[in-house]
Length: 118
Ligand code: HEC
Image (tube, rainbow, N blue to C red; front, side, top):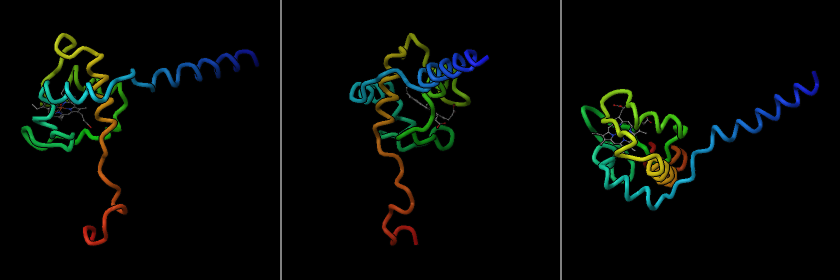
């Protein structure tokens, strides 16, 4: 029984980070792909968000887990065009993800000068 628990804990310890860690991507390459593949047309040149049949989400410093990010590319939830693997191989998706993660997100409200928040 005790041995079972140890195995379970070990399995979780091994599986946890493996699931959460995105494949290593290169942010500089990701920026080029992001611009070349037209992501910027709807999501803004620095991932600040934009418009396409309504507002499009900001992607800078995305908090989406990598799996959800990839899922959106392959099977978008709504109006976004799909990017199949033949068009956007997974290595390039990982590069874009690294690029988006490297961008500064929105500043926390308390980091803004008081004049902007009042
Ligand atoms: C023609 C416009 C358009 C283009 C081009 C486009 N997107 Fe999108 N994207 C959208 C829209 C609209 C949504 C909102 C969800 C939906 O409609 O599927 C979205 C949602 C997303 C989301 C989910 C964000 C969230 O926080 O929910 C991600 C991630 C994303 N896009 C990444 C990309 C990447 C990476 C590219 C380039 C490879 C790209 N998009 C190209 C329009 C676009």
